[in-house]
Image (cartoon, rainbow, N blue to C red; front, side, top):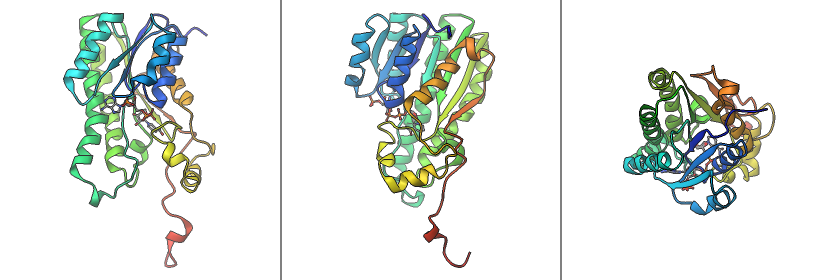
Length: 268
Ligand SMILES: NC(=O)c1ccc[n+]([C@@H]2O[C@H](COP(=O)([O-])OP(=O)(O)OC[C@H]3O[C@@H](n4cnc5c(N)ncnc54)[C@H](OP(=O)(O)O)[C@@H]3O)[C@@H](O)[C@H]2O)c1
């Protein structure tokens, strides 16, 4: 099926990460031109750069630095022209959970800054690009997390940063139409997905069992599962009348197992 992505210019943040690489590769297979950003791991993008020299460009940016984001978007416009689709995918999560009463303010601010303020900055320069290059179609896809839906004990910074994506989406879906008549803004919430971000947890067999107890399909996602939802929302052919919606890609996950049987106690 033709997704209508041929020659669309997609700017994908966090392209050097687990979900990013697979998403970039699928977009390129569909004929899109892709600007993929990385913060530090440029080598992860070498293969895409050599396989797609005319349609893939890697750009460095730290999305907490406005000047980096502005420069990455400027270079992207210069290389491939109007950016039709932004996938705001870059993000961080601390490997070790921390109880809120122990959480350093520095950690809280950093997580909110990278995940939520970083997505805002990318959206800001995406909208500037739409203002500069008028056109009918545009799609912004934010990448949140099931942690933003259900919360996540010991990761209050991360879950709050991802819950904020909902507010960003609901506001920007009403702004984008002023710049691109058929512009759309949607949110993809991955659940546990096998990437460098989650592999520590997913290789701990006891923790993995607790995770699988919350998922009807009894499996975690592969990056391909998340990329599929992103391509669907990028494609006007498939989702051209869908805006302000969340697709949760988590095998039907409903929440979390909070206690092991031993932790329930006798007085319940
Ligand atoms: N994996 C999961 O289980 C899971 C679940 C729910 C949601 N998610 C979300 O899915 C998205 C992608 O996650 P992933 O699993 O692919 O993670 P990943 O493999 O750790 O990749 C994270 C990406 O974000 C980039 N990044 C980190 N800090 C940045 C910064 N300050 N500025 C710009 N880029 C930065 C990294 O760049 P460098 O590597 O070049 O430094 C990398 O490309 C994230 O938003 C994450 O929160 C993941």
